[in-house]
Amino acid sequence: MTVKREWTYEGTELAWLHDRLGRSVDGPGHVVSELVPHGYEAYVRIFHRFRATDGSGRSRRWQARAKDSGVPFHPEMSHRWLRSDEPDPGPRWVADDGTLDEESRGALSRLLTTVCGEQGVYFAYDLAAMLWGDHDEPIVRHSSLAALEDVRAALEDVVGDSGPEFWWPQDRSWTVTTDHDLLSTYVGCSTRTAERILTDETLEALPVTPQTRVDWDTEPPQGAATR
Image (cartoon, rainbow, N blue to C red; front, side, top):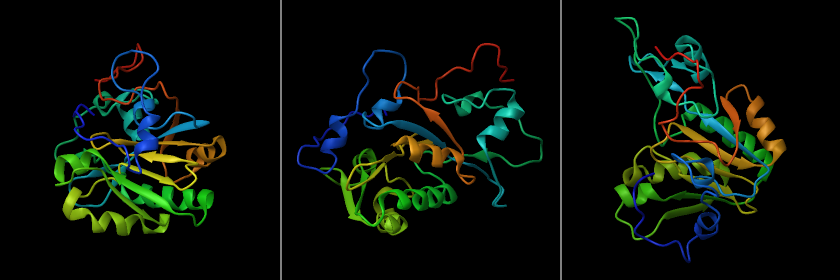
């Protein structure tokens, strides 16, 4: 989020979105309104699952790890709040930055399909295209929501296993943002859609506001122990 953009969005499909990004008040760190356009009824944070590095395919949720670490499962929760000490020998747990895990991605895609139907969806790579691709403007693909994995596969040689950083339907009824260096995905949508995301058993999510901090340097609420 600290990389200075060296291109403009005028004339691109991302122009509308970036016109609606920014923060209304000064403060520390970065906030949701810098990632997801203002104007939605509700905003949600979806946590990327931790996976074991031992090749077992096991995964863990943030809420479980928060309980083990004695910290609250919180909208501004950072992975730095979690205990790093694990039994030895034992697995290490990592969550991918810039990529919503496959299971959560599938669940979110299926849920949003019921919201937007068969209308076209835009998939965009912004900073990833600048950092790893030889491009002079963001990469944008227009397809069906069902084609999400096909879009990712087609661009893997350019941006790796990341993103899309932004995806939204033709009517802009929701926007999904997976920033290239964060461990969570943020969604702006209607209140009803947010409720469905928050109650989906596959997704691990919490409600947030446009002013909620999203960076890694947040502090646990006073009195919460991290060690």
